[in-house]
Length: 479
Image (cartoon, rainbow, N blue to C red; front, side, top):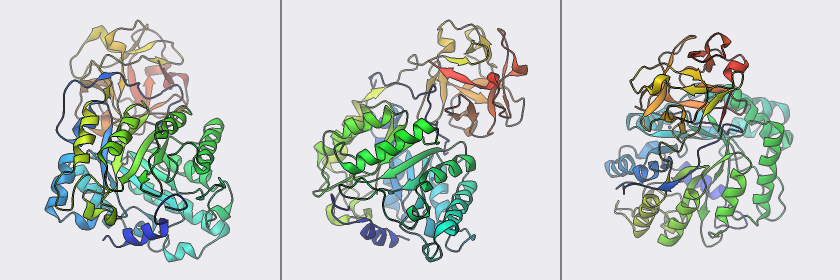
């Protein structure tokens, strides 16, 4: 794409346009509440990509086109192999708001519902982009366009509120080439703050969603475009703009080849306090070694959430002539598939004991399972921190906080005063939490905060859900 790759975004738009998201709210960029570190070797080999990735708390996903869900070969592979889904075109601007203020979620919901029915998490793609705008939006400019962008974000995120793991809030805002400049788009011409406005709007629209910036040709650390994106993310983090993650499309080809410094790029962005994800992976010719290298780069970075390949089989790719995916057009596995599966099975995992304490800001005491109980329904309390296993909470990429390895932080209801307890992990939204940079821990299902009852600070104070009030009894640090 652009200067470094074959075929530009316009070509991709045309190709994609020819093609007729269980979901969880995944945890945000965390400041003091950071994603867990990777640790030891995976204990066993899994036979599918999604299961192998899950060993390290990551996902391995694919782009799904609603028009292909009637293809049994396509859906069989997609259901078997992947544990995350991105709608290929169905959640983009032209699909979801074909007329201003008139939203159409039929195609997006078809992808989303298929994912939910098959136990997949969903990435949302994409809310603000210079491409694939409907005609009515293309005709706008200035403040009118800015308000239309805000209205679109609110409309789409409102429809999927609490259901999407990650949103690509802004897509491809930087120019190709060596300038490091912003792309000269109609959105950019509304003012240089448009990206910040988009992220702030998105956070208000759905506090449970992880908010990502997504771009291509930003994998090589030495490129000007990469550095420009890095500077923006660093600035956002310094000023408190709500950005949780950065997506690297990773369309590698002869014009934009894989470089081993990709791992450095991922590490440097993660060091800013954001998660990273490989969001649209395809590699010209599907070389096994390069696919394995990319996966290992993600596994080497604790804040890498996972990998999404952009399509199931070569015939589903937006660049089928490149044969860039893990499955041949007939659905058979390529050698690259085996290389990726082996990399995932040889990757790192976070064992249940490799957790951390969650300490109340007001009390200085830890989130504790009373008497080290393991029974489902045991309500949590505050207690002096002592480092025991009943105070060790492991954060997973699915948005769970696990204790003992198989018990999840669980909300017994969705209203004020609902007890917060441990319960066997089953994947429900009442077991998904968002760890925010302000120290709050918010239930994905309820939108309420983890709260020490009565603003108590003493040993034995019980834990509940309550409307977020910014009190010290609702702020936590994770160590």
